[in-house]
Length: 487
Image (cartoon, rainbow, N blue to C red; front, side, top):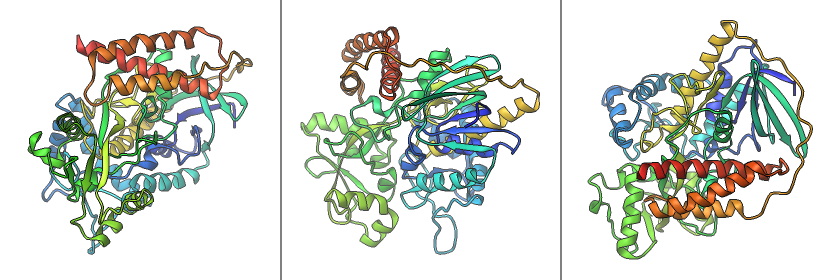
């Protein structure tokens, strides 16, 4: 690993990968994955990528409208227009790069329907779309000599220096640092701040903490999305997602009495947006006094189900459920963050040379609730826009960073036990689907105490400490934002 790069990309998901690929051979790019490159939210994405690729019964206006309706019209309309109009070309580009989306018997892209969409516009690779995209984009990146991908390398701190940034790194037990003229934060979500989440172990909100500590603006961070149909497995912290596409292909949502109930809450039934369905489940749970809910797709052909949803079918079988014969137990679970590091249409944060893309960024695209399959699209569009803006800056002669010394003392006291567990319990109780205002205020006081303790104490800069600090920072920001919304 060199000491200095033109661009440092934190994260190896779709936003970071697609951004990296945009740079020419004369721009040195370092991409860092906290664990192995496959452990990211992109690789877990099942459903697909939404985009208006055919205009016979669909249009940009319809996609814009569906996005706004799902987001309760709290979206940034300019960002939505950029996403919807530019996204299809990015989809075509990744197809040219080798991404294999499913096709019908005529060789045409096989598009599916998901909750909140008024048309079939979601392209997919079975139910492993994110994994397919990540693998193919990684292959493209690996062929470019200017891109260096380092796995199992954790960023523990980023600081602004003259002409760019210094990032302090931890690999195993070895500390080092690198300098970069520009940084793109593409660190993904914040799911591990909750007891139950669909997010991978790496989703601890590190990028949001880095941006916050450097003084960048954080916006709408209390806009947390809870997916209505995670596999209900209370003994596991990481929940297996039952994709939106299963309901898109006709699955019914049932209560503890094995009865459909969405007609009580929304005329769109099972295909209502995620926040509507999650809220309906919680309200129905209170009505029935039971947390038992199920998806029923047994009326579909077994061959179709196992071909269309191989990963879901296999994962359910491993848990004793045959989706062609059995009901799938489900319940809402933390899934996605709509807020985050505030950025403009070129993914620029409020700090010079610092960019953010993907789930850690607040583009304004999603508003109050993300429309299904807009997330991978957002990663493509704004990852590319970040890279193109940096290229313009480099072409304009922006000064490169001069590498300097690295810190040499990361020692200190051990991390106090129980902080992360306490934060997760607070968030699950105070801010889950239907927020509890009194629990939010009480929880905020405790989390602020944790924050002061970690900021003011002299603790060893271990991986556990840095992730705990990220989780506490994110929890504090979410609860502060939520408390202000209650006023």
